[in-house]
Structures are given as C-alpha cells and as structure tokens.
Image 1 (cartoon, helix red, strand yellow):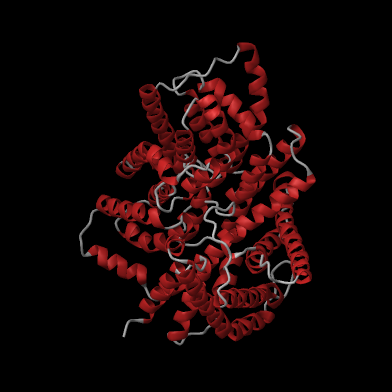
Image 2 (cartoon, chains in turn blue, cyan):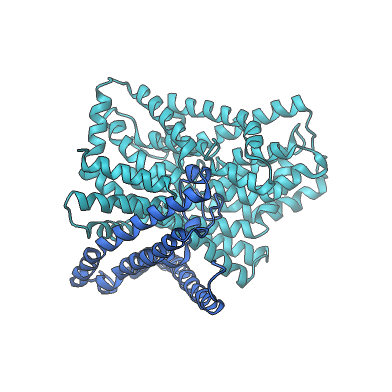
Length: 176
Length: 431
C-alpha cells in the first residue's frame, strides 16, 4: 500500500478490502456447497436439482470479475514481465503510465456500450431461478469501472514517479 | 496501412511488455480492435459474460485449485511422503525417488504443477537437504521437475482448459495423460539413479517392518482419493467437474475429520487463496474469450491452416513443428496463455492433417509443462528458487538432465500416438 496516504483512508481502504474478501469467500463457498448438493441430489437421492447449475455458474462469473475488480492487485495477476524487470525504475514508470492510461481510455470508451449491452439483457431471465440477466451481468460494469479507477490511480502514481505496485514474479496465485 | 488485426496484435504485445497483466492486455487490445474496425464496443463485455456463463466445464478449475489447497494445508502430504519412503527409500538416491513417486501419487488428486511443487516441495526439500545429504540445488531441481507430472496424470487443470478450446472430452484427455505421466515418472527415476550413483547420494535406512502397517494406514485416506476420483469419473457416476467438487469435499473431510489438521480460520484462508488463484486464472480466460473472438472473426486459424498447407507437412512433421514452437514459447510465456491463445490457432490444422485431438492435447500439455521448467520464464523454477533462496541458474543447471529426459518422453509420445490413445480406446474412445 502507499505509505503517503493518510492513515484513516488506509484503514477505510483495508476495511473495504476485508469486506470484499468476505464476499469472494462467500461466493466460493456457495459455489462449492451447491456443487455438493447437486451431486448428492442427483446420485444419492435421485432427484436432480436444476437450480444448482445456475447458482454455480453465477458464482463463477461473479467470483472472477469481483476478484479482478477488488481483490487482485496487478502483481497477483499473470503477466509477462521479463522486459519490465530489466529496465530502470524510470523506464518502468513510463511503461506503467502508458499501459495504464491505455487501459483507462479503452475501458472508458467501451463503458457506455458495455452498459448498453447489460441493460439490453434485462429482457432475458435465467431458466430456473428467473433472475434478470441485467442484474446478473451488472458485475461486468462494476468490474470495468473498478479497473478504470484502479489504473487511473496507478497511472497517477507512475506520473508522479512513485513506485508502482511491486513486481513479484512468484505468487501463490500463479497456479498452472 | 497495417490491417486492423495487425494493430491489435501490436497493442497486445506492447501492453503486455509494458507490464499490464496479460488478461487485461488481451481485453484492451480487443477493445482497440473493435474500435478501429468500427464494430460494436459492447462485444467485449458480451463475449466475456456469455463465455464465462456458458463454460460449465471450466468450473473444474476453481474446484481442483481448492482440492489441492486443502490437501496441502492438512498433514496429508506429510503422511504420503512417509508412505513413499517405505516404498522406494532404500534405493540409491532414495529421497529423489520418494520425491518422484510422491508426485505421481499426488498427481492422481491434484491438477496443478505449481500446487504440487509448493505442497510436496515444502517438506521434501527439507528432508533431502537435512545433514547435507543432497545439494539444495539438486533437491530443488528434482522437486520442480517431478511436479510437472501433476497435470499430466489426471486430474489436470491445463487439460480442462484444452478441452474448452478444442471441444474434446475431458474424460478421454485425462485418460490419455496416464501413460505419458507414468513414462515421465520412470524417466525421472532413471535419471535420478544415474546421478545418484555418480555422486554417491545416500540410501535411506530401511523402515522397520512393524511400522509399515501403521504408516500405510495413516496414508490410506490420502491414497484413496485418486481411487475415489477416478472411479467416480470413469464409473460414470460423476462428470469431471463434479469429480473436482467431490475431490475437494474428500480432501476437506480427510483433513478435518480424519487428520484433524484444519481449523475454521484456516479454511477461510484456504477459500480466500483458492478464490484469488481462481480469479487470476479467470482473468486470463476472460481476456482470451474476447481475444479469441477477434481471432475468429479475422479467420486466423484458417489462414494459418492455408499457410501450413503450403509446406506440405505430414502429420508428424506438423507435430514436430508444433512441439518446437511451443517449447520455444514455453520459455517466454505462461502455460495458460499459450493454451488459450496460441493452441486454438494450431488446432484446425491438426484436425485437417488427421491428428487425433486427444493425442494432440496430451502432447501439447506435456510440452507446456516442460515450459514450466525452462528459463527465463519457468514458473516452477521461480517456485523452488523462492523456496530455497538459491539462484535460478544454479537450479536450472541441476534441472537440465531432467528437462532433457522430459523432452525425450515428449518425443516418444509424439511419435507413438498409441502411448496416449491406448488407454482412452480401451475405455471406449472412438477416435
């Protein structure tokens, strides 16, 4: 985290982060339990459930986009950093500034269309639970806005010559 | 004026080189393409949302990640290693063999090489280097090498991803990996024997007979997991995705009830770390969903097919070419990226040349696993280097003989498709 930020912003930030983590853990747990219910009902009780399929897929979509929006830092994500690692800190700041600005511009330009698509989906409902797809898909808009804000902040830091998020090639999150 | 697609590729490479995460780079490059090509910008979101929503098979990925995390947190790994010590400890270079055999057994429950290297490596590297028995670099090298068996013997996260991009059956892919995985294990053990003899590495003191039943019983719940999983999937009881959930449930039960080695707080931490891993893989998948849409409307796979057809390659020649390209790319790129972006472009040509897609998939996955061992960008090298605090290159030097035999195995399974296809065919594969 950025040491220059006032401490109360930091504590609000970390409180929010903890809550975001609660959400993602809940999504994962619900997904896992639904799967187990599905197996139990189909094979043990011989009464297949339809809604579990929908719940697990829903949790999966939200899990990925929610996590990408609020949990992962850039260093948690899989990236190609051979060149980035080799150059001077100054060049790194320039790299970060350019790539983050590009992201902010491209995401911002496409945001209205993404929003339009999500709204358009309000006519469709999920097969079992009858949930409106615009609600289900709204996570994409949240994700896009979070990316714009996050990378706007990263670009701003890079512009002022502050250290961008530390690069750590080994992270538990790189799995395969 | 370069074509829209060329521009898109340039943007993608530039953003990735500048350090933007690869998933986001792919989304950005695709949005850029939609923009310059004058297409609907909402397509990016649409592809990601519908793609994720309709990719039911991919759900196996988070569940296999969870299963591996649960197993690593309990004392399951520990007990398994003790059991392997009984099996192969008394041969020359005993702990090296223990390492390989533990990875083979672990491979039957975990689908991720990184998880295996972390879980097994944490314990075995300590065992191998205690009292200076083995050099740390050697212990690190054999740990990293043996870990690639994990996703080759089922279950396998990369194979789930391959199944998604190639539309092949996960079940048959899994079966296809069994023999190549065992071949790799044998190859590594031979190499370990050769090196151990030359350097006079120790044998382990034999485990007293009267302790063997207890150690076996201790390891029994862990040993049963692969059986439950494979029986469940191939007995037709569960789909591979449900199998992944069952594996995670079994690991949770075993570590909480039988081994009593997990608390609620730990469970929360495990769920969180699995969720994070899922997200970072998920972002790559999301990026690939949009990017592959662009690749498809640009008809890239077809152009590649026409281009390759110009060389009049045989099926074997093409497989060799693919192997060479992937081994090279494996040095630079992370495996999932290759599977999601490069491999889909290669598949139509493979199909046109009459290469069986299950065979192709297993060859590709073995290849990509070797890529995890090759510098400068080999994730497994980073894992063990980080664990042992030894310079990367000193580990690479020790890993070279293992990389060499792995490439020999890759050549064998490329030249002899039966090594891959025999088992799936026995189980009813019609390909």
